[in-house]
Length: 242
Image 1 (cartoon, one colour):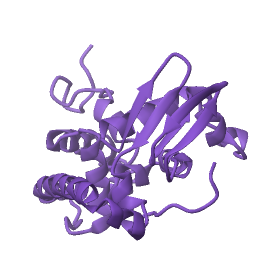
Image 2 (cartoon, helix red, strand yellow):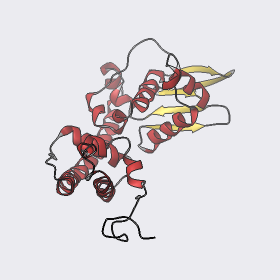
Image 3 (cartoon, helix red, strand yellow):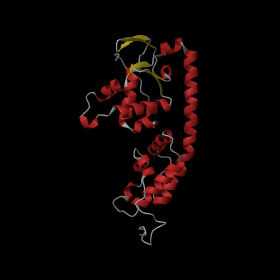
Image 4 (tube, one colour):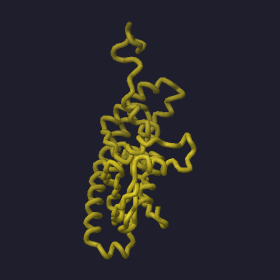
């Protein structure tokens, strides 16, 4: 890995990456491994030509780097690491070109975020086009997300008797993270319904009917949980008929 530094922008806190410490660590590792200028690299005895923003790795190799120095209980397996990398690719953060022996990872928009001013000025036309395309895509996504904040939070307040604010940046970041994972407004409402039905009658659990719990990293599990009993097909106490 080259000696030097990477640029980390504050808006990463609005990304789904921020909600998962292992994904955040992996993304930073990718940025640190990427070449800052064109170079040749030897991997498993083969010489590979790299452009700026690229690095060569393999599933086991990058997993070993992820776990370096980590306690056993905090280590991750190669399947999870590769799944996160493919998630980055799906979100158009990077590209992965694989062979039977190695993969070349290319960080997207490298010139926009990591190249120095001197380097940017030498190739301004290309980098500005990339920047404008990326920013327009991001702005379009942000505008769509804003239309969901109020309906989701209002639905939670209505069902749980709470008074959360759709303008809360923390709540918006959680909603953005789930939307970036391709969940929908209906998914949010189903999670709210599932947990209100389960927790509203439990004094020790009702405090968790809040955005930080419902819209966090366990969102998919809450969405897909099976009800223990049916309120519609049971007796007057809500228990199933036998």
